[in-house]
Image 1 (cartoon, rainbow, N blue to C red):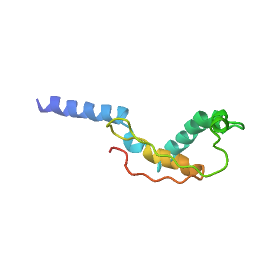
Image 2 (image 1 turned 30 degrees about the horizontal axis):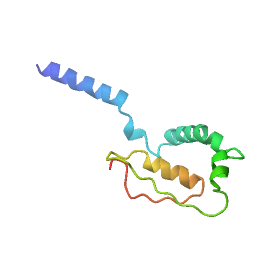
Image 3 (image 1 turned 120 degrees about the horizontal axis):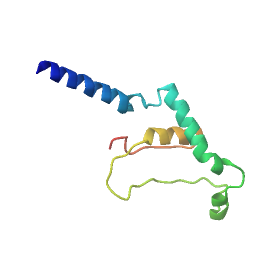
Length: 102
């Protein structure tokens, strides 16, 4: 019986290590930071090219702007540190009123 419990606990630990990598997904991890940069570059590549149609259509060139991200429904926030990191990379100010997990 104890062997079964030990084997079960060992298996659960292996599954956790294989599937739940959240502890390593931080901006302090150079591999994660590099991957984040690649993904952001891929997603924003089109918008960073000259002549963004949305910017032109909305007349957003020039004067300083501000924005607020507001949830429509209750939920749990995730990726906020990454959002701030990306914004600051574009020399934008960012302030959080919530943290990941809230």
